[in-house]
Amino acid sequence: MSRPLIGITTYFDAARWGTWVREAVLSPPAYAKSVDKAGGAPVLVPPLSLGAIDGYVRGLSGLILAGGVEVDPGAYGEERDERVEEPQPARDRFEIGLARAAVQAGIPVLGVSRGMHVLNVALGGNLIRWLPEAVHHERHAASAPHVIQISVSSKVGKAVGDRIEVATPHHQALKRLGEGLLAVAWADDQIVEAVELQGHRFCVGVQWHPERGEDNRLVDALVEAAMP
Image (tube, one colour):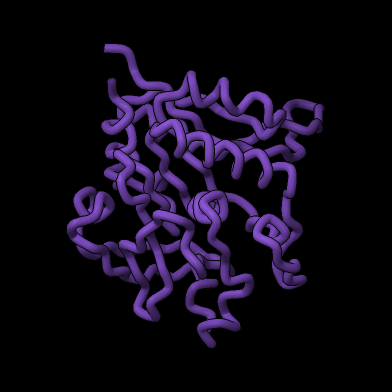
């Protein structure tokens, strides 16, 4: 059986190889390795022409919206908070368009950290622009692990159980959920840590990084959903 092609979104940044320093298409290797481990064939997707989106969606069997810098608030009609790092509007436009097309085409999607935010904005939601101010603490910005509660009836819960310890620093979070999205995991302060699109065979967003470490169950679930 051929392996399903799983797209992984990427970003542009300066990279060094040998004596050269040039702009490169970058992706942390954990994404590709986790897809390979799950039985998929990873395909890196650079944020280039919006005209390429339809071709990607027709050719891919699944999609990972990868992590990275926070989504530009301009994408959901708000002003930028200067405390947040400089956004990447071109990447935002491409990934929001790609997420919408993937959802419409019904292909499995896993949004990781920033990718969950992209998915939410693509479906009409918005974000808490500076989370420490909203929740009056800095725990979400810390790298220390914390336990989250997960709905056992959700796709996330079926993959990883009703509780999981995660560590993923972030300064923004979901606020108004996009159309059709349902919250399925929460931190102890009720900040949403995972969402699923109702009626879709597999469209999941999580605040943490399931591609890291030894627990590959969510990526396994994505690849399984992408199997013919």
